[in-house]
Image (tube, rainbow, N blue to C red):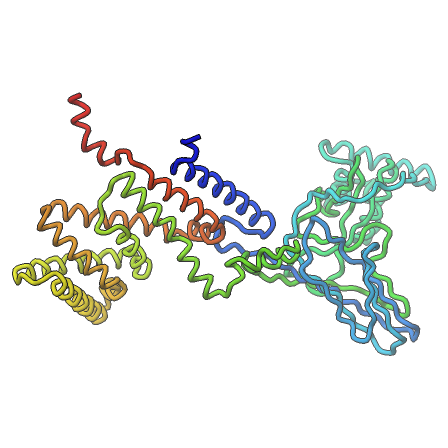
Length: 511
C-alpha cells in the first residue's frame, strides 16, 4: 500500500490514466469528428442540384420528388429548395418533398439542392424490407419460353457469380449470342436493359427492381438520373451495375428512388423532367469536424482549440509540439546522460533552425559561436567583470550577425543572411558558458558540450519539423498529458545514466 501511494506509484497511476484518456480521445476524434493521422487531410463535400422543369397546364401545381434516405451511406450537411412562390412540404416517412403552387402560365424551373459528405461504400447491403414473392411471368408461346431457357443456359455456363451478374454480363456482350440478340430490342437503353433483366430474373422467382440515383462526379451537369439494378438475394438487397455487373453500391452513388415509386410526379404540368448536376468542394478535416459535431449534436467541439481562428490555431500548432521536444531533451540528459550548454538551449537552437532552414542555420550558428569564442578569448585578457564581459559578448554577437547579414545580402548567400534569426542573448550565453568551461575544464570538455548541444538541437529539429508528428500532436493534443506524466515519472529516476555505465565499466570488470 505504501508503494502504491509513493511518488513513483502516484505518477505511474497518473501515466496510466492519461494514456487511457488519450486513447479514448483519439478514437472519438477519428470516429466522430473524422480526424486522421495524415496531415493536410481534406474532406469531400458534394452538392447535388436537381433541376425540375415543366410546362403548366393551367391547373394548380403539385411537384413531388423522391429524396435520398439519409442513412449510413452518407451524412447530410444541408438541404434546400429554390422554388419562388411555392409552398414546400416534406414527407419524412416516404422520403419525398412536395412543392405546391397555384396555377401558372409560363415554363417552371424549380430546384432541390442537398450537400452531403462522408459518403461510404456499404457494399450494397441496403436495409430494406424483403419483397413479396415474385410472380413468374407467363410466356406467350413455346418459342419465347425456349428462348428464355437458352439464355439462362448460356448465363449458367459463365461459372462464378450470381444469377444477376451472369445475366448482366451476357446481355452486355459486344457480340451477343443469337438468342440474346433476338431477345433484346434494337434500341438498347439502360431502362430497357434493366426491364429485360428484371423479366429474366422473375422467371426464376428472383425479385429485382430499378434504382435511380446520382453518381458523384464533377463531370455530371444537367444529366438524367443514373440507373442501377437492385436484386433480393437471400436476406438482403444487392445493387448491381447494369453495364459491368459489379456488385455493391458504389461509394460515389446516392440513391434517390427505388422500385415502383416514381422519381418525379408533376400534377398541373406536362413535359416534366429532372436533371442532376454535381459540384465537389474540398474542406479541411478540422473545419469539417465542427460540422460533424453539429450533425452528431455534440457541443464539445465548441470548447476546443479547433474552433479558434486560423491565426491562433497556427500559433498553437507550434506550442503543441514543444512538449515532445522537451521529453526528448529530458531523455537525452537524464537517461542517456548527454551534457549540453544549458537545459533547453538545444530546444531554442532547433526553433531557430526552423526559421532559417537546417543547413543555413547550422552553418550560421557554427560561424557565430566560433567567432564569438575567439572574441571571448581576447576579452579574457582584459580581466573584465562578469556582467560587463557578458554584455560585451552580446554586443559583439550583434555586430557579427550584422556583418554576416550584410555580407550575405551582397554576396547573395541566403545561408549567411539567416544569421539574424538566432536568439542573441542565448547565443551570447552559449559563448560565455563555453568560454568558462574551456577555462575550468579544458578545451576537450567545452568542445564536447558544444557538439552535444548541436546533436540534441538537430534531433529536436527533426522531431518538431516532421509534418506527421506536428499534425498528430496538434490534432490529438491529449497526448501532451501523457508526455507530462512521462517527464514527471522520469524525474523520479535515480539510476545510472547510459553514459555512466560506460564510464564505470572498468570498475565492474575489476570486481
